[in-house]
Figure 1 (cartoon, rainbow, N blue to C red):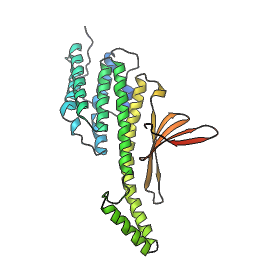
Figure 2 (figure 1 turned 180 degrees about the vertical axis):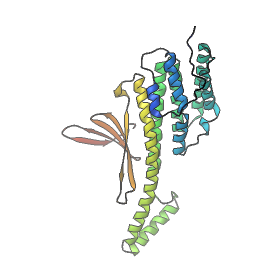
Figure 3 (figure 1 turned 45 degrees about the horizontal axis):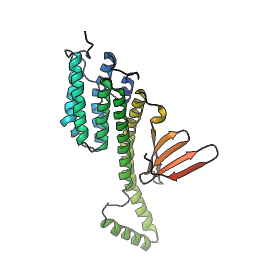
Figure 4 (figure 1 turned 180 degrees about the horizontal axis):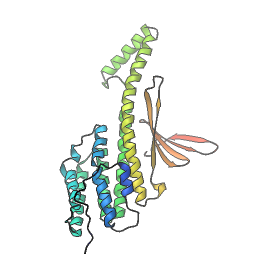
Length: 291
């Protein structure tokens, strides 16, 4: 009698959290996973949908591509896998159908945050089908694109140096600011400095909130990769730091990629620096290495 995935008919998908998915990943060992572990993993993945939509809305991304089209069709196939009457062969076919739908969604998606979610679903489909190597490759892609989405937010926020982001109006306003500052013997400069600081702080504060939400997701993907058997030195760790100005507005944000206990890469939205240190000295150079 073939083993099948099933759940009690009275149970509905729960609202899962990122850490729940890490706990649901079966121990690394190769081969197709046993029914109880696979059920927990599938339930958790389906339960993460609302968390994904919430994150996308916080990033001001369109959520419709995850609510319709091939991605939605793939989720429906995953839902069908849990049907109590489904045989093992039917479940495998539905998993393969879900994988095909997610692959199709991957080919038409351009947004990096949504790409990461799709790659996550593909990786777990491969894992449920017993292909751990393929699962690891898709998780690496999910991890990398999520970091790129976080980096893009910082790049965009760092561009907001002018008042209007208009190439004609900003120079005129800059001249006006200089003129009023000169005419008032510097008093105007203090006023405009506060205006610019407040505007920049608003943009950077919003970016920081978005990046912090993404950072929790990025951390989860790193933990999933470790659970799938990758070595710790192959899975980069990321940290967010920020600083404030005299008005307590967020003035700078930095993504730090921890390479090892004596080496890290820092990205501030404009340039990337590689920092190494030991007990005696610290060195810092601009680099083209990816964050």
